[in-house]
Length: 232
Image 1 (cartoon, rainbow, N blue to C red):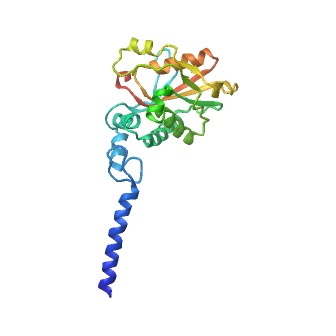
Image 2: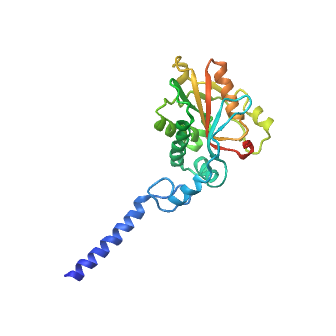
Image 3: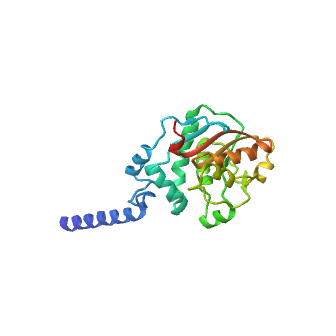
């Protein structure tokens, strides 16, 4: 009888382990089983990408706050988010970026979060806007209001990757307009812009100018990743 119970116990444990493996899911970066978005090993690799100083002052732009360097595991994670159909990557990135906000001392009231938009065709192709997903997670932690359609991208643009700095600015000239989500909120004038990556600043500069021309004030820029070319 005891042997039979032991066999049943061993069988039940093997069954539990098998179903646990199935139900856990996979790490969004390495595909190993985990109950979180990233496994512990990949989380450590991502944390190694953290910037030393989270704020940069760049001429012609509001203060820039970024969580990590665009390299290694963070670069791989953003590639999976944007091109690999892994929208779940945005959740921890937004949470970590929110901690940068909470540590910044910029806890002003009356701010609204606006993500950098994709053109409708590209968003339909991808299925989501990665900047919006990061911003949603960011707002869940900070409690700040989100205006997902605060900005609209009116024209499709060439991919920024591989373009020279001047070409990036020309590529993004006059491609944004203020959306109805902000036009219907006249009392919300102070904006925090959120994007996935800061490289040359062309995208965020164009978005900032569009908002300023409509009477809004961009208080800060927040990105999950910062190109090493900006590290001084």
